[in-house]
Length: 507
Ligand code: MSP
Image 1 (cartoon, protein in one colour):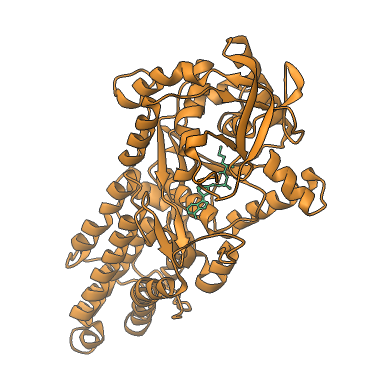
Image 2 (cartoon, helix red, strand yellow):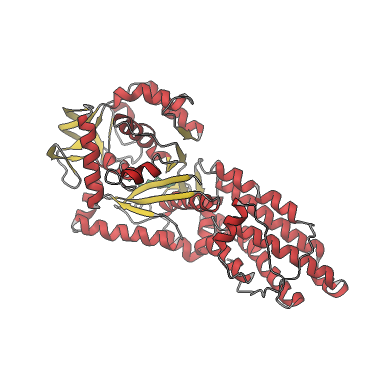
């Protein structure tokens, strides 16, 4: 058994959860669930980023004490993930006292390594990004991301010698044999990082003198830890750094950090450099997905086009939401969502293909087999063709190509629907009842096999199918036996099936 530690970014609590946060979180959840079925021991972490100017301002704008405000929004994130069946093993909050203590320990270690110095800093800071920008990074004097003028800030800060790590970082990214080699995907993003690293890299201001909503530096309590250093450390503090070295040893390094392109630099450069400076191992892989727009527009409160997970669930159900978010465009590329496209995709793949397959299959078993699983006869008319599609899921997931993996599952569904049309069990029921039983038996066995592949993506649907198959044992355990031990898809003859309401009503 191997260990697989994977993470989402921890989300800012200046806003309640939206579909962008859900996108990364659901993708990570699919992987966590998939690897659990493959017999790996998985630790899936998500959480909330609760310090810094942006959060302090958000609380102040609502006349709330920051901690109380954070508590409320963090609870909303937790609820949203629960509603979306996100199976995270832990949820870290950066205002948790244990995190604060651990951040201080890490900073102390950095301080003792001599990679910190104090200097006066003057720069342009975008509060929304929580970062300084160099003059040539601004577009028309505005933050390239938020299109707002950054604030000029000038104060004494502590700096981390990030520039000292530039060459080692370059080597670690580009040389597969480097002892600290780590991977950045997709390759275009990796090349972007390499390109920037080949230019000059500035040292990083890691503290703020004028901000109190954060973690004080252990050696100078008048300064507060820069929110990004505080936040990145969550990946370590959540697994027990530094109090539980055994647990850290078990899980670190993370196998995979997932995020969108907006925070690539922090994860691909600053985070590894901080780890190198303290002689810790680096994460194995960083995967950077794209940004999606809504009707061609950036999702923003001021545009009034922010999609909330709860609205999607109301419209398409939990599994509909999970399916639609991950199937729309390749993970890694930018994409666009609009209501009409989502509805069309829902009706085509879920209502007409998958939902229809399940509902017609169990109706036929009820009508032609007395709602009982027919006996096995080892006929393989469609099973290999279905399996050929389903087996592609593994490869696609290894490369985080969720939309291809889902397309493979839907292709398997279409093969089964085609099989039903071809065999016409309703005719066989009259002319060749034994053949009808045999066809429906094969259909049910394929549906059971499919439920194993569906579970990581659409857990409720997989369970609903399982129940209709009359299965009483544990779906995950069955799936694990199937994947890990190549166990057979056994279906007890005579098992009573339980046809249920349609899974995906048409919109
Ligand atoms: N708090 C930092 C991350 C710290 S991690 C140590 C942060 N938070 S955030 O709330 O702004 O979340 C950014 C992340 O949310 C993106 O990297 C991405 O995972 C997700 N997304 C937010 N909007 C998105 C889209 N429109 N499209 C795709 N993903 C989006 O940055």
